[in-house]
Amino acid sequence: MTPSPVIELRGAGKSYPGGVHALRGVDLTVEEGELVAVVGPSGSGKSTMLNLMGTLDRPTTGTVRIAGYDVSELSDARLSALRARHIGFVFQHFHLAAGRDAVDNVADGLLYAGVPPKERRARAREALAGVGLDHRRSHTPNELSGGEKQRVAIARALVGEPRLLLADEPTGALDTASGALVMELLHRLNASGTTICVITHDNEIADALPRRVRFRDGAIVSDLHSGPRTGSRTEGTGACARVEGAGSRARTEGAGS
Image (cartoon, rainbow, N blue to C red; front, side, top):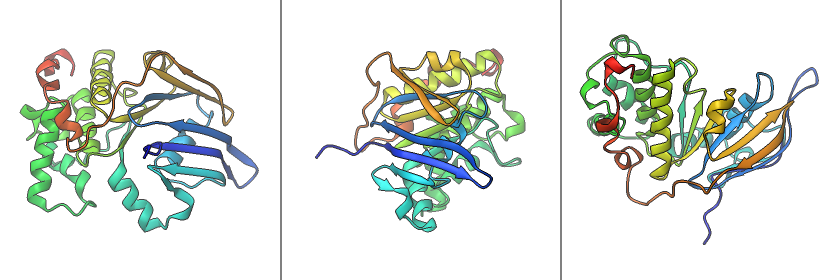
């Protein structure tokens, strides 16, 4: 059987009281292993797209299927389970818990997956090693650079081995060097099989990705491909394990990572 797309929108629209139409009849398919930029200026609809792709909101019209599941047909409890099993989130401002070390922050990504505490911490350590932070795992957020915080956030998003990673302005709070390292890591993760959507207003970041879906006024205005999809998920291997070695290639703290 042919696997279903990771993301499939058909005529998807989202409206709010007062006649605000944030999305208008969007058709979009993202296949397994793609690396996609969803790009557009503020108010273009890309944040609404993030909410629909992440099952944080439901469409007003049309259908949204994530990992083969129709979002409109699921209860809130089943949507939460779908997110926990299939989707990882990375945000611009990290959202790490102050006073908790990197291992605990990453282990929190498994809180709703029914994983015992000891196993959560073991998998968190493995995930941190996969993003090159094994040597920083006992450090709290205030002891980490911006680039390191974002890599902890990526490890947290990947520790549950999601089918889809949604990265919302992942370099927006970083300096140029740290941002470049984070994007390099996302490319490596995609090369090892993770499907990734990067939501951004930065055309330079978008133009460096193999597919760019551009939004304006709630609609897709272009969908361009510059090459074949990079990754293809392999059964039985974890996303973080597949980028083992990223740490050996990453720059040190003093280089702005």
